[in-house]
Amino acid sequence: MAAWVKGGATDAGTAVEAAASLLAKARAPVIAGLSADVAAIRAAYDLAGRIGASVDTAGAAGTYAELGALSRVGALTTTPAEAVGRADTVLVVGAAPWQAPLMKRLIDAKPTRGRAAGSDRALLAVGANAGAALAWPADGGLPEAVAELRAYARGHLAGDALPGQIASRLAAAQYGVLLYDPAELGEFGVEMLQGLAMELSETTRCFTLAVGAAGQDRAVVPVSAWTTGQAPRSGFGRRVPEHDPWRFDAARQVAAGEADAVLWLGAVPVARPDWLSTVPSVALVAEGEAQAAEVVISVGQPGRDHGGVLWNEQRAALTFWPATAPSDLPSAASVLAALKERLATVQAASRSDSAC
Image (cartoon, rainbow, N blue to C red; front, top):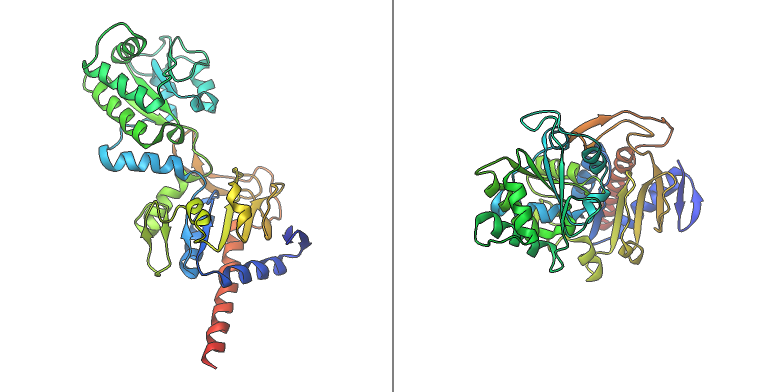
């Protein structure tokens, strides 16, 4: 196992010892990123409970934009496979969805199932245009643009302006899909988009589909739910999980000086935040991923170095991914388990010394 402590290469035992020492001294540790397979995510929650850490994810901005809207208005969603197979009209909201792998599948193929089978697929755009048949720049902002589209769809606004034309095309669709990136659209925009889909579905079929989530947030949400009964941003400082999206925002905690140590879990490569280098940290990352942290441990990447259960974007479900290039690198779950065991020993020794 490749490992480094303060920039110097070392062995696995020394790295785990150093990581345990760093976390044992922390009064308010954070476990962040959680871009890993299900086994490692579960191990991260287990460790958080052991050391009283709070938990946050790499793509929390998008995750909470969706969860906030879901809690208030619900959601009407489809899957990538259904969108490719059935959608005759796709509205792309914002710039980010154009970069998603799903777009190529939507552009290259016609619907093959349902009433729209064999028909041409119409691409509409709001906020960006990378090949849409009808595009509205929406310079006033994406959430406001979606709200205006909704007004046209409800008949509160009328006319031949671009938003009116787009609303009419959606209303005439056999199977419409509203494609968006929740982090780009924001909570208010997601809520407006869900409302638009529900209102259109009173007379036709229209669904939303989120793309572009960072890391493995879509795997973390169900794991967090079945582990704690709550959404990902939770804290274990009082030994029971407490959910608070503001309080347990890792970036906010670091900026406010509340967090004094971070364990970054990035077995599935994901961009690391700038704030990670401003606080004592341990990083478990896939081999070849550069990382500025006091302790860095290379772990296997699930789906490459070892098998693991990951979020499958194409199936919109958790699925097992076998190793494509098996290696001897340890899994993140096994390193987290070793850390937990070592911390238990350190804490037991500390209690024994205090008793003396």
